[in-house]
Length: 214
Image 1: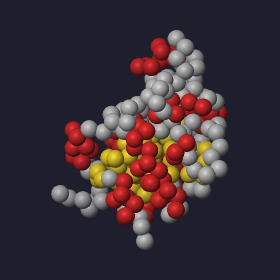
Image 2 (image 1 turned 90 degrees about the horizontal axis):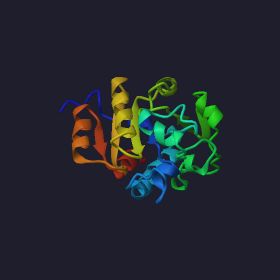
Image 3 (image 1 turned 180 degrees about the horizontal axis):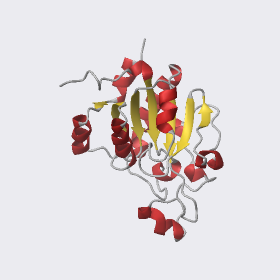
């Protein structure tokens, strides 16, 4: 297999976490994705490594306004009828405690809705994405290019929807892609094979940790 242009450049990589928020993750949460709690230890290991190496981390999140005005069509009716899922300024919208950096502060919805990247730690930010993919109508590509990032390492919540879409969008923009299969919930074998076919490097979290170790 030809890997010259797809092999990860670990030292010019960024870790992207997807939708690992209380309302999507915690047991009994209104939009709980099964398996997300199980992959949190592996996510935490990745995050600790990226923090130690002072490499960029971006947490992509959803925020659903309570009037449903910014909600994707498949959930819009439920929100309009009173469902509260990742509503701005609520605990349900916050990153789960296990992946927060030291000194974490609550999400600033106004800042995020303006398309700005909210700093939450050293070389660590939160960004708002209005739909499945982290690049759709966001400034993520420019943000990464400005920092000379060419490799994206993906972890987080619910592979079939937002992580998978974000990885395909990254491929369309010629980023090198790493899918950390044991740090993403709802992963299945066919999906792994499909990502490999577009050049994604699929691995477990410990390979990433080893690759970034001295």
